[in-house]
Length: 341
Image (cartoon, one colour):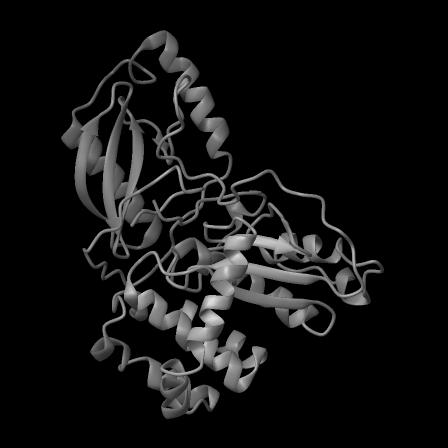
């Protein structure tokens, strides 16, 4: 399984576990601009920005130290490869292998690499496979966030969606939609759990659960292991007055039907990446912060409700598990995502 932007831009799923105590992964603004500028320079220099090439080992150490300074820890090196004008350094973070790129002088971190000629490879830009469609307005917009339940970028989008749901849940039909399980069987199990909570307790309860689940950095290291999850999930159930026995029973009986229906919905729209945002059946590129999502939803009303005048946060949520935000990425209209090979 792989993590990427649209199904053709891939990173390999790792079996390594990340034990980071904090998740403050920074989603960078202007990635494409950085890539283009850097690669235009490479066309003329044929080497690093300054021409002062450092070794693969030094580049490896430098980028891992940099990423750990941004995330609070948990990033470990996997492999390093010289790809001509960049070093491709694969790191492990929260159980996933992620390729990042460093200019050969060690001066610039590039999260994706786009060659001037040939096919696009290994880039994290936008999970929507097609250009955004025009959104048809309606009295009550249908809003769908298509998510892999353990995708770090899906979690990022969910966290940005929470304030929008709280603000507009009585005006718009806002939904989390499953698109399968690319990270392993444990991801399907978690999705079945979330479906069960919604079916048995309603959408408000699902969002309350997601707010607890998404910020729990300890859950990220469990990777679906029952013994590990049993340290954390019962506390969430108790806090939200959710009956564990009822949920587990429904996961084995009724949840599969809804899981398949949601997967079929995603397939019917040609969606394979997480997160993908859809309003009234049209895919929408939107910044991963509450205000940007709110504006996109509000623009889909025939007559926007008064709630749309309320200003929400413009800080982007952090990728993966955790409660931190990143105001520096607030204006980004697209970011990395997860998609199977």
